[in-house]
Image 1: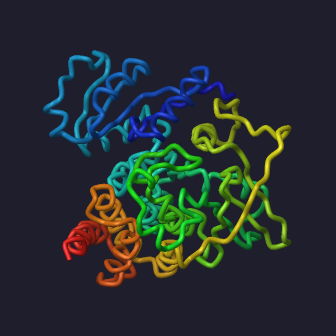
Image 2: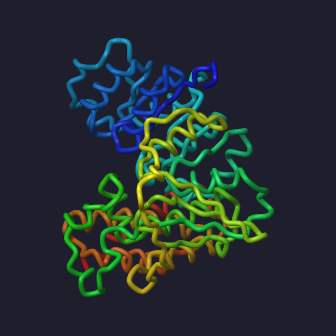
Length: 387
């Protein structure tokens, strides 16, 4: 381990990634220290985390919820900040070394943006940031000397495998997908999928939005777009393979035909820790792969007819511009419609396709334009639902 303590701010500390990050920090023998935590709605849990981890700052991202909450359980040592301004103030603090960007959806963009402007190392679990504004975000990081280290298990696997070779020798990367709970369903069966069935993921424990994305395979579409910008690849260098065991997290193939894979049990603590300790490797509290136990690893191509989201991902990765922001916002709204009972499971991706096809595309949008289209796409899905 390094002798230097690394100070961590976690954006979205009460979500699944945030909680796993705290598990990693708790197991770090005090080499990782929490200095800031943020939450949107689970404010009681935020106070509980603050009592355990003793951060200097906590942020209630929703000021309305904060004003209605009884803060008597907040530790006296923790300074309370509010709203997006509070998140931006936290990530800019000189005491913060690493910002874990774990807020789900487009809501995570502003905090990540502020952290990069402050020149921080960002452990990025919020794939939507690069889906919405990949070129702008990567340019911002370059301008301010900031680092982006991937936390998504697939992108962490690619990042780790790339350490074994030169970028110019990469032929392609292959992102693995569990296939979700419905990889064997027929089209007719998919049309009857319930919310409860969609939330029952066979291998991963995630929040509801990400779990539904896994079931539609929209998560792979978003990961294709994220990988395109994060690793500076051409879209046709990014492929997807279904691997239901979720042991191999991605492959990198080099020009000589060598294929490198990263393997570990399906647990987020390992990729989280690697982002927090890079380039060092420490003992990790995640489960270990037991190669003394018999197992089989299966791989198959995705069925693009039953799961058309992957095709959308490749399309958006090719055209760039405003397409990523529109697809991401439309998907967030469509998933919310499904969870709320207004859309069927098989209407999620067509709703996204409809909104994507009907937006006014711009090849080089400003950040303000991307945010404007994010709002527009959500409204369009609402109208799509009503018709």
